[in-house]
Structure formats: C-alpha cells, structure tokens
Length: 183
Image 1: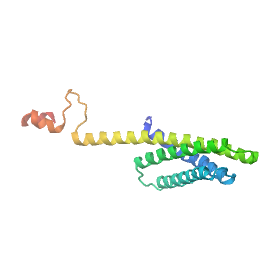
Image 2: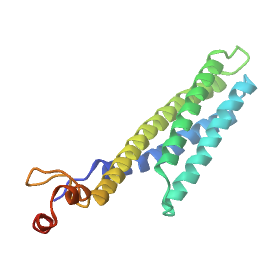
Image 3: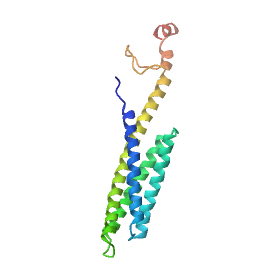
Image 4: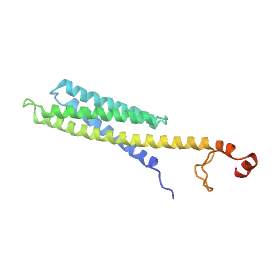
C-alpha cells in the first residue's frame, strides 16, 4: 500500500473547486442579470467579473479535460487574478445592496442580497483554488529542481560512506586508479 503524495491529493480538490466555481459564479451572474440594477456602473463590474470568470474557468477546465499540458503558472496566475476580481466585485455588490432605496421591491432586494452572498462564496472558492495552485506549482518546481540536481550530480545526494561530492569533483580528488574502485 502506498501513500498518496500531496500533489496527488490536491488534484481532486481542484476538480471539485472547478464545479463549485461554476455553480456559484453562475448564480451570481443569473441573480445580477435578473435583478433591477440600482447602480448600473457598479453592477456592470460585478456582471463583467462573473462572466469573465465563468468563461475563463470553462476554458481552463476544457484544457485540462483535453489533456493539454497547462502550465501551473497559468493556473496560479488566473486563479489569483480571479480571486482579486471577485473580491472587488463582492465589495461593490455589498455596497450596492446596502444602498438600495425604498423604490425597489423586497424581491429585488433579496436577489441582490443572495448575489452578494454567492459572490463572497465564489471569492472564497477562487482564493482556495489560488492557494492550492500556488502550493502545487511550488511542489512541481521543487520536484523539477530535484530531478535536475539528480541528473547533474549523476548520483544521489546521500551516500553510505558519508561523502556527498558529485561526479565532477571525484576526478579532481582521486587518482585514476581509485576512481575505478569508488565508482
């Protein structure tokens, strides 16, 4: 029985986050589109962010599903940007909801309240996904660096004899006769 590495455990979490981002981002999009808009410029930004993130997440998910070797840097950068956009949209939607006058019905007020709540949930989901993407990116960078070091040194960094020099240093320290015995 083998234990899963951190990298293998985090991938299914990201897949679940994609689905949740679709659901809550779509709800924000639908609620803003169906409500009476008290502040057009403010809620236009909320609508732009929800549509942008919905389309961006769709494109990124399809790239993963098609097997495209998506860069971890792209994934981390997209989700950090989306988290920042959604946070700004959530703050503006909160302000628009709190500033609604008596001219709006209770139903329209509730639509904006739910849009505010769902936008904060979407913000949280994008933030969690951004952190997971950064952790996976760091782990993959460390694994790549470790593999590069292994290829360069031509031997593992540990030794039963206690010596940790690499293959290039062996030629300088030992005469040619001893090199055959050490290798």
